[in-house]
Image (cartoon, rainbow over all chains, first blue to last red; front, side, top):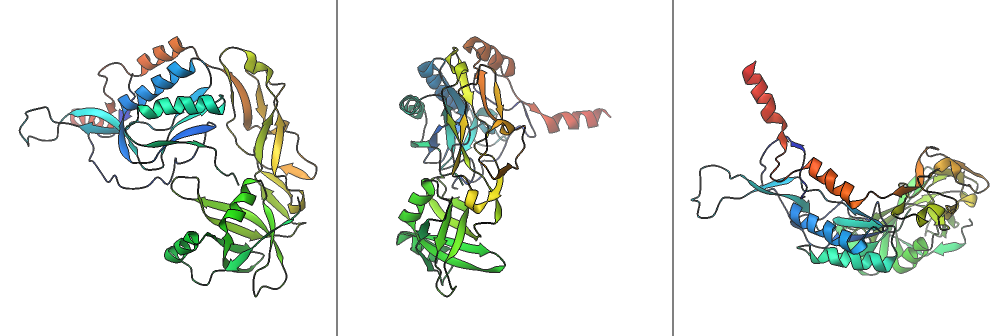
Length: 139
Length: 218
């Protein structure tokens, strides 16, 4: 099932600025390897779910997949052939704001080659260019 | 640990984003040196050499700064990364003495294959990547080897159970979990949970909307 928040303060939301780079959530924090977005997008709940299913099918019961993004942004869309105006449309889908550098998925408990093959499969379901990364320098 | 490595440093006369960017393009790494009640000094390091040393686990170095007299012992205090979280863009160095007591955060390195991992669906989780120790600069460990070979299913290893090197003292929470073997939930359970949380066409509860209804009733 696609994810969405349990409760929200407001039913609809403005679009807001998209052109920024990630300053947090941009490194592997929970797992050993991660899939990092190199471009920004609104990642829909369905795309996140598709990635999760792709990973689950490939991994069977091995390892653990962490989903680092959550679709908390409601995106509204007017029906087809609808004239403009008459107020803001109903919510069509939920999306996660992804900035360049955002870590999308992480994986733990599997060797590097399996982690890489899993994350490549997830990357195919993503609407943006992604890269495979490991843990960064620790101080 | 001894400050056996010498970092080649140069003073940075002009500071700011644009000058720092030019230094990076020239293969230098902007840095700042502070501590011991002296004025901070803006420096640059050789980027390749510095990152190679940091990645090999070195944290204490000797530097010779122009106009600052004899060579000094410095400790790597902080590292800043770019938006992709991998490229080092700036480092903080702190002046230290080898017998000075400092706090350090050595990375945990898990050794051994846990017994509990042989069970189907069991996975090793490690919520903490490091622990905070108090020790002299000379005794600062590069990393902590943690033996997890005896961890069975549903066993938990706390920070207090880590064998610390001589001359070091644990500062972080002794009850903090550093490693645990957890049984992974069956797929059917996960699917059932997911259906409980959100069904098809479910809509989130709007907090403000409910409040206005209550107010209008009152």
